[in-house]
Image (cartoon, rainbow, N blue to C red; front, side):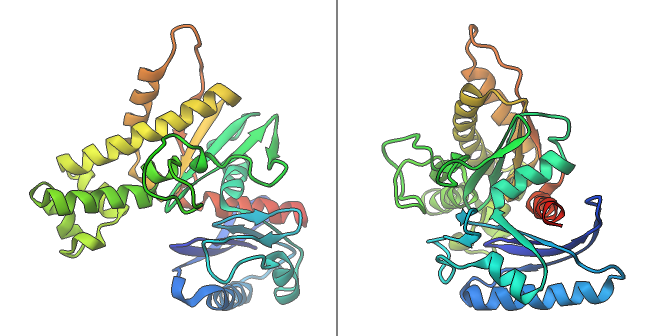
Length: 313
């Protein structure tokens, strides 16, 4: 069994011993419900899937959309109220009744793509999840790298500017504040206030309210050809490319896999990122790193949670 707990949506899935997906239940996250609400949902959904399965559940993997202390199997998230220092791995073992392994969504995402998606066949790869925030997972020589403080791969919190809005981590100038889903939505709202005539379609897609503009609506407007939406997405892509070039210079991975909700923009994101990387390239420091979209789409962390469950079992 696998859980993927995100700030916008959560998923519960059943997988067979080869990692093939059998069933998935997916719902929106009720953020105001906090930890208690989410735990109850996980319990109900897991029971529903178990009732539909002929085979017993032997282990569970959990992907959590926030900081995790892997060694202690605890959630350490400070920006998700109610989850601070919560022993989620222990809760699953005691409540669901099976061995459990917990990690953050970026590490789960890189495991999912490495085992079952775009990273198959590589030895060194990076997974970047571009969603409400930005996270990263690293596979080096076939091993997931977590770092001394479980902070390896935090590409979203690399400082890329001396200014900008405050980041969710409390700092300023983080990459996340320039190209995450939240940053893209904020830029759309700024355009809506300053140049409403340029984002009429974007406001329509947001229910007629500038304050309701989301990254998803902006991506849809960009897909329809809205110039302002494409400009905003292009700016975010160039910032993202800066972060990816730093990753290429440090790790020189075979592949960088882009996942998360914003990556659902497909070539609207990938093409300007590739163009920006080409513009930044040095003629004397060549690289062959491929930047591709996640093959598992929004389910990369769920597949990674399944991979952790298989290891536990």
